[in-house]
Amino acid sequence: MSHSLARAPLRWIVLLWLGWAAILLGFQAMAPGRFAPQRPDHATAWSADETRADSHKAQPYVLDPFLNAQVAWDSEYYISIALHGYDDPRMRAIAPDSDLGAEIVGPVGRHPGWTPVSYAFFPAYPLAMRALGWPLKALGLTPVATATLAGVIVSLAGALAAMIAIADLAAGAGDAERGDGLRAAAYLLVWPASFFMAQVYTEGLFLGLSLGALALARRDRWIWAGVLAALATFTRSTGAVLVLPLGWMWLQAGGLRQLRAGGWGREVVRLVAVAAPVVAYLAWRAVFGARFDLIETRHFGRGLLWLSLSLESWREAFGLVAGGDAQARAYYLVEVWAVATAVVASLLLIRRDPALALYGLAILGVALTSGAAQGMHRYVLSMPALFLVPARLGRQPVFDRLWTFGNTLALAVFCLAFSYDFWAG
Image (tube, rainbow, N blue to C red; front, side, top):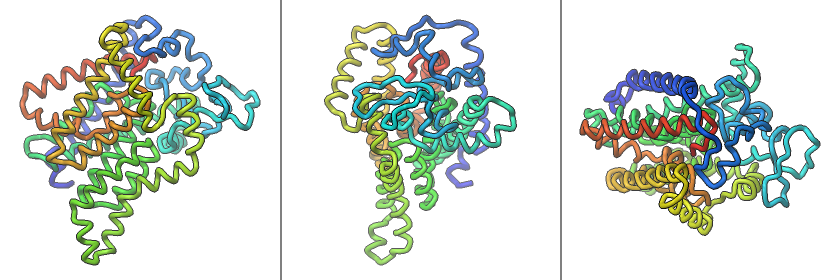
C-alpha cells in the first residue's frame, strides 16, 4: 500500500463501501413498500409520457422482477447489448431518414437500413456484464436477471475502485494525516447521484477506471494509467477528456525536459499512455461513429457543442426553476446547484491541482453544451474537485456533518425516484 493511501486505510474504505452498498440496496428494496408516488413524473417537459403505469410494457429488459429497482431508463440498452449485442431485433430503432425515433420492437423483419437505439451506448460496460454473466448462469436465473445481477456487481466493483482512487488523490494532494482521503471517499458515496454506482448504469465502472487512471499516473505507473484511460473511453465518451490531465501530469513530471535531454525510452511510454484515451476514442469512432451520431442527434437530440440548443435548454430550465411545476422546480434546482457547486469546487482546486480541476471543468463543458439541460448532478460525479475540495473543508466537523446530511437527503429522493422509474437524471 502506498504511503498516501495508508493514511486512509484500505480496510476502512472497503468496510464503508460494503455498508453503503448494503444500505443503499436495502433502501431500494424496502422504501417502495411504504408508499408509491403519484404518476406521471413532471420533472421535465417530456418525462410525463415516459412514466405512466403502462410506459414500459414494450420494454422487456426492464420488466424482470429480479433487482428491478436497479433497472430503469438506459439500463435496458446495457442489458440488451450484454445479452444480444448491438443488433438486437427486440430493441427500438430508427431509419436513417427519420427525424424522430420510430418504435420498432420485436423480430418483425426490420429493414436493413434501420439502426437500433443501442448504438448510442459505449461497449465496455455491457461487455463486462456479459463476461461476468457467464459464471453467474450457474445460479439458474433468467437471462435478464443474470445480466442485471452482473451489471450491479460490475457497478459496485467500479464504485470501490473509485473510492480507493479518490482517497489516494485526496491524500496525495493535501494533509493526508487529517483524513482527507477517507472523507473524499465518503463524500463520493453520499453525492445525490452516487446511487447510480449501484445500478445497471455506467457510473460505477467509469469512475473506477477514470479516477484509477489519474491516481496511477500520479504514482508514475503510466502503462496501467493508459490502459485504464482507454477502457474508461470505451465506457463513456468523456473518457477521451482524460488526455488533458494525463498530458498536464506528464508536463509536470518533466516529460518535455526529458525528451529534450534524449530520454526517449521512458517518455515514449508515458506519451503512449497520455494518448491512449484519444486513440481509443478514434478507434471507437471508426467502428461505431456514424450509427452513434444518427441515434444521438435524431433520437436523443444530443450532440457535441450544440451551443444554441444548449442555451435554449438552459433558458427553459431556469424558467422552470423560477415558475414551473413543483416537480420540475425541485428537479432543476438540484441541477443548477450541482453545476454551481462543481464549478466553485474546481475553481478552488485549480491553483493547488490544475490538472484535476481543468479535467473536471472540461467534462462539465461537454455536458453543458450537449443540448439537454438535464442529468448534471450525475455528470459532475466525474469531477474530482467535487470531492477533493469538500474533503479539505470537512476537517471542520460542522461542515462535515452538514455536507453529509444535506447530500444524503437529496440522494434518498433521487434514489427512490429511480426505483420507481421516475426521472432521476
